[in-house]
Length: 384
Ligand code: CMC
Image (cartoon, rainbow, N blue to C red):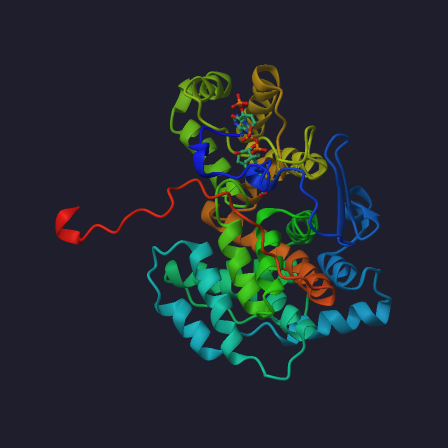
C-alpha cells in the first residue's frame, strides 16, 4: 500500500487497494478473450488472425452483437440498415459545421454522439441505436474534417462498406480497393478488446440503467486519453517530431533520450499483453507494405528501429496503436483523426458490452479507501 496516513483506516475492512484494478475480474463476457502472456486475442470464438484474414467490419459487428457470424441474408440486411442510417440529423450537422475549427476531433465526436440521442425514436431498440451510432460516427468524423478545412461536406453513400464510405466522405472521391481493404482491416482489428478503460466506462454507465448514447459518450471520453486510444495520434506526433530533426534524425538516440528523461514512448506497453500485441503483427505488415507503396519507407524503418530499441532497453513491445499510426499516415489521414477512427470501430465492442451488461446487470459500485481526517471541528471562515 502507498504512503498513506493509516491512522484512520480500518485495515480489517480494507486489506488491499487494487490501484488501476489490475487483474480484477468483475464481469464475465462472451465478447473477447485475451491471453496476455501468449498474445492471443479472440472475438466471440474467432481468433483475431482468422478474422483479419477473412472478416469484414460489418461481419465483426454482427459477430459481437450476436455471438455468431451472420448468414448472407443477415449480413445483407445489416449493410442495408447501416447504409440507410448514415445521414446525420440536421442540427448535429449544423453543430459540426459551426463548431470551432480548432476543436479536438475526439471532442467533436463525443459531443455529436451525445446529441444523436435527441433525434432517435423513443421506441428504437438498443440494437437500432447501436446501428445508428455505427453508421453515423464515420459521417461525424468526415464532416468535421471537411468543415474545418473549408471543404464541402460530402453526403454519405447509400451503398458500399463502412470503410469505403468513410474514405469517400473524407476525401471526396472513391477509394481504391487497397485503401478500402486497409481501412476495413483496421476497423476489424480495433473492434473489441475486453475490459479496457472505455469499455469499462460504457458498462459502468449501462449499469446505472442509463441509455446507450450516454454510455458511448462516456466511452469516447475515456478512449480519448493518450494512455488509451489517444496513443495512436501521440505516436504519429512523436514520429513527426523526429522528422523535424531532418538529416540528423536518429530513432535509436531519440528513443533512448526519451527513456533517459523517464518519458513514456507512445504505442508501447500494455496492461494485459506482456508480449507482442497480436493486432500489431497485422498493422506492422500493412505499415511496411504501405510505406513502400507511398514513399514513407523512412517512417517504417524508424518504427522498426524504435521497436528494437524498446525491446533492448525496456523489454517492452509495441501495442495496437504503434503501427496503426503509420498505416493511417500512409493513406493520407490527418494524425488527429486516428483516435476517432478507433472510436468508429470500437463502437461495435462498446455496444456489444452494453447488451451484455444490460442482460445481466448489477450496479457497478466499488469502494475507495478514505485516507482523510475525520470529525474535524468546524472553524468559521474568518478564523481559518
Ligand atoms: N514507454 C516507456 N516505459 C514504459 C512504457 C512506455 N510506453 N510502458 C510501460 N513502461 C514502463 C513504465 O515506466 C514502468 O517502468 P518502471 O517499472 O521502471 O516504473 C513499467 O513499464 C510498467 O509500466 P506501467 O505504466 O505501470 O504499466 P501499465 O500496465 O500501467 O501501463 C500503459 C500500460 C498502456 C498505460 C503503458 O504501457 C503506457 O503508458 N504506454 C504508452 C501509452 C500507450 O501506448 N497506450 C496504448 C495502450 S494499448 C491500446 C489502447 O488501449 O488504446
